[in-house]
Amino acid sequence: LIIVLCGPLLAQTKVEIVADEAEAVLAILAKRAQGGVPCDADWTRLFQSEGYRRLVAREATFKHPMDEAAFKEFVLGKELQPRYEDLARTLRAWRSADMNACGQRALAYLPTGASIQARIYPVIKPWKNSFVFEGNAIFLCVDPAKTQAQFENTLTHELHHIGLDSVKPEPGLVAEFERLPAPLREATTWLGALGEGFAMLAAAGGPDVHPHAISSDEDRQRWDRDMARFGADLKLLEAVYLDVAEGR
Image (cartoon, rainbow, N blue to C red; front, side, top):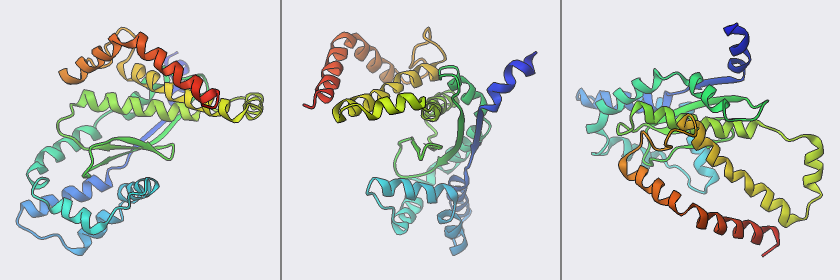
């Protein structure tokens, strides 16, 4: 019975971790910690890693080209080396996470027919942000300050975005959408941004769990302050959508 009930759910989720960029950076830090000097092969391993190459491609879409010389300076910088052991410990913990279980939690708050096919890239980089790229890649900055529970929360959140993007509308709805005036098409498209709320819900695990139950006090307090303004903010959001829909 368990196989029958869970089989389809598992079939809709395939999550793989690709940690080659982070591993290459850690290998360089390990060599330096032992008094060695990184050689050309060490840098080639880093710059040819799948994680680094996809990161370069993503930054290029934002007109932010990555320079190998600058990235070398970051890896060899004074701030990164003292964090070597913490970074290595964090990566080991992240690799032990049940990625597909996170995907299944996201599926619980997705429409029927959604699927999650994703590659997770833990990366060591100068910027702390995490994001989805090209519909199937999730980049997560390796951060020792993030607990395992926070990592899995963020992962579930981003996997929900991928699953939501996998849902395709019926052909009839697509045709109807195409017939809308341009401002209405734009407003309808931007309604997709409200999927962020469902991602928060999926990551929390349910409506009875505080979305920032495992976050810092600062993040939790900010959320509570924002929720206190929900009514007023909803009216502002409605005004924005109406302005877009009516061409203003």
